[in-house]
Image (tube, rainbow, N blue to C red; front, side, top):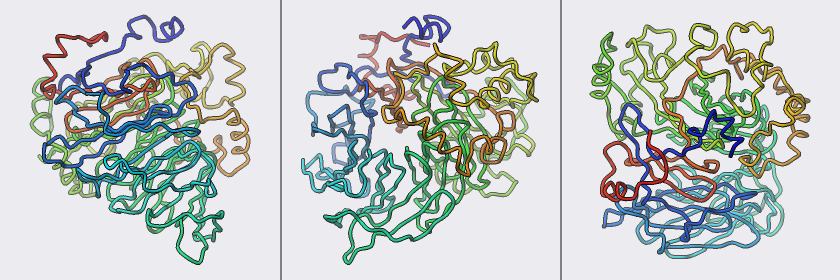
Length: 571
């Protein structure tokens, strides 16, 4: 703990927050809405797979249709989720399963087929299998890749194909993706494949067999593990992030590569789409969140706030705001500005449709602010706003102020508004950041560019005493990762060659976002961030799933909360 306190700059940095405020108001942790294993004992998470959470609404008559599924170690739980309305009752899981010899790693509900009597839940496992279960009927209907003939590596991500009742996609740490149909069997022998399509750093094969069998398709993507994938809101495109540091976006049906992006360094661990499909955010081992434009296929901003790897990124559909009024010239007080912003705010259902109305011309019929969040292995939650001065940098600003603190790292005047140069647990000591780079007048740009030029080996030599919070690191990144880096250097995508190109612009070449809020909210690394209508849901590797009520949504639990104030501090 003393080491963390020293890194964090004092004891107050280590106090866990139970409340934080943004321009919408205060978000409050509802201690009675915490979900975990029934005994509420912190889970000893060392070497275990990340805790994940999935939600489904079964539309039952009582109006309490939300269901939650989460995995902790070898266990999988399925509960009624009461959210901000009532305290969690952990004594009555609808379903609980304990697995032997393998652990659940990820899961996904089919929202199309869910009813109060039946739900289809896919569960991926550390040994490579995928199970289809119905936790309401308590049935296990099918097991895919049972003999591990298709892939022996751990399942990193599993999702139903949008709009389909039977197709699902599975990613593995081998770097392969497989398309399955729940109606088909897997066969008793290893599949034989036939090349369907090939492109830069990817290949797609069909399964050769007399009768249709799983997998229908095998995608081989990049080098190393495929850590996560995400379908675009319209279901037509697929964004994949891999251990080789690349985001690759495919047209899913046409099986074609649409665009790519490279991390600043290290693997990419997480990815998400904006509600209108125009932007993709990725996060990973460079401690940054990177915003990528789908239309322009380029990085438009990076966000720096985390001090360790970023494990989840997600857009908040409910706080993304659209204003249909004419772009306004505005120079008034903060209060006036807040009022004007508030009057333009809309709920997510209309935001989705209005975002889709935005045309791509420069006339900007609406002004838009996208809200997204990230959680990391540094135990911190960050919220970010993506504003139109970033989205439309070459147009006159419709307002004189923006909500996100934005600075372009090449302007030395702005650097004073940022914290000390990259206070990351894995960055160089500040005294070493005196390289004679072009941006040497800027501590941020200098620290980053200096750091980027170091090889993994150099970094280890310079800090024998500074371990990159390895106890927060993912279990699946093996000791062979340095071998993988050497192998990568020989391929076309040598990281040194991508830096400074459109694939991976230098830090000073794109705007640097600062988070709206950056709060320590857990003792262990964070693995879940989900935005719901009334609340934000987070979870950490100790197996605690936390509900944060949105402003004005505290509901029935507020009186209980005041009577039993949590140990955390309020900010």
